[in-house]
Length: 303
Image 1 (cartoon, rainbow, N blue to C red):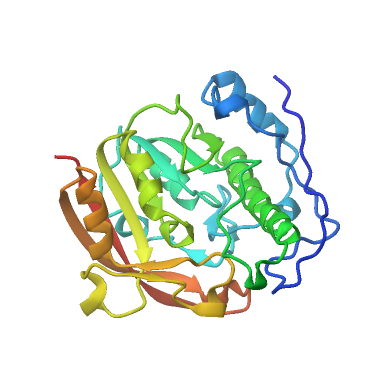
Image 2: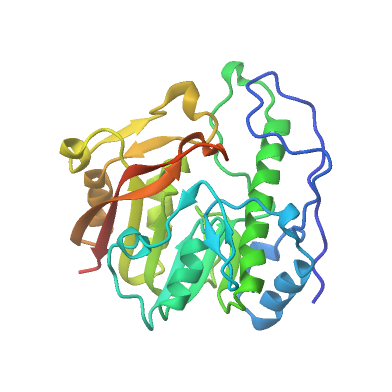
């Protein structure tokens, strides 16, 4: 199977904060649009085609969102360093021999940690022709260029997942599409994982609802919470919590209590909350120090 290649092109600039800017000499290694309805991606043939399409990726093609250690011991730095704290991040859940559906894997630090822990992992990420959720623009101006620039950033991050997939000789599978309308043949899983992505979604409830339809037993949700531990367990959703500082992709700060309520409504009523910290470079600046960010993980089982 040969997947046609799609490149990020140019469009009229938006008269707004430029957001993420794609370098002019950057090369996209995306295949083209997925199959109709994003169906058929889990076949061995399609997964092999995805892998072969990216067989020539170099680090220059990648944006590493996580700090990762390669098989030879070399460390590639990223703004999130979860190493040594992955189990807490995943709610101390034993994932051995479990089928896991992971939403928003980014570079894949958790993908490959879960696989090493004995899980059979399928990762789901935004499709080639589906834009990530960006804030409404001031003055309702044209944001096509902005969306293309963010698409380039997402593509480079997805490249890093495949770079590690090759380095680790991984058997994890990747599916692309729309998180609000999952492919009909994506199947059922024992566990679904949302690793700090609800804050980036226009409709967290809709995304969780989709996952719930494909999850037999447990949903794990991890999010940051920067407004104090006392309020963490209340039912709170703060829209655009950081104002202009959160443009263009930080939609929410969602408390653990709000996540518990959402999942309870979907039938996942046996819940527990784990509080922890994770190392993070604020602003994602490469020269910024790593600082501990307050986070929580909700583990919710279907009852």
